[in-house]
Image 1: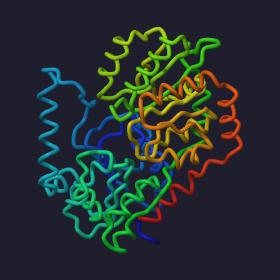
Image 2 (image 1 turned 180 degrees about the horizontal axis):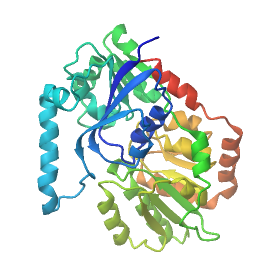
Image 3 (image 1 turned 90 degrees about the vertical axis):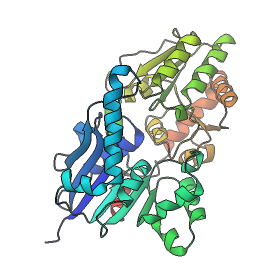
Length: 379
């Protein structure tokens, strides 16, 4: 009998983000006969905790909800968490002795780039080390060329788009480093999306009024501020439509303030976090991605599964996913272009309907089984 591979997987939490969802989808499709997996969270929190298979051991550094404010009463706990995690990062032997006692791993896996240093600094020198990169790090100022090259300390660098693949190929100094880079597809469960989309929606769109929906963690990178300002401009010009934003995150108060400042409470909805966002796709007419940058926005696959015409800023992964514009309307990464594209969709219904017809005639360029296997091949 072949011994099970012992794997440590690390991620910040299992809150409502794309990387977190993809990780749990991956875990749900692994075999307990092949692997013994420990999942280590910085914070025991998030909607996807309940979806982790029972055979996977969950460990954590801190417990409780993420603290996204700077209220006086929250500062002591927030400071404690930061200091505690910093100590364990600087002195990883403490972590491996007290939280992961007597653990030996064949593989140590950083499920997001933000955990890369913790995996590379592991006191277990014999383990195979893997990092999963979901973002185009060239758009993040702190990721200098010198810092990006540190990822070559991993045995494998899993990247989710051709653009990220090219970034690391350009950085590689040798053929050995190039061989470490592996282009993979994120696992997405199409059947699950279709099933969940049939559940009731607590919001009904207005009859005869077109609705744009956008879904994601409320971070500045998502460009929800640009979306709301474009929405206001269109209203001022007499274009009746609605905008729904589904999601939560540390930038939610900023977006909420803008929402009230623009006086769009009658036409826009800040829906917040939803366990199941797919009924909102079903209700809406169009999906819009207003992001300033992305890694590989798999939410576009979800929109295509539900046959929604798409507007997307030209960020990493978009051209690849939308087949250079065949499957969606790709626009320059600019607030004026978000406004122009929304106006175009509202004025050209026949053109927009062709996207739905095209999407429905195409096979999505991945299967769940193949995506999971492509990752497993690197174990």
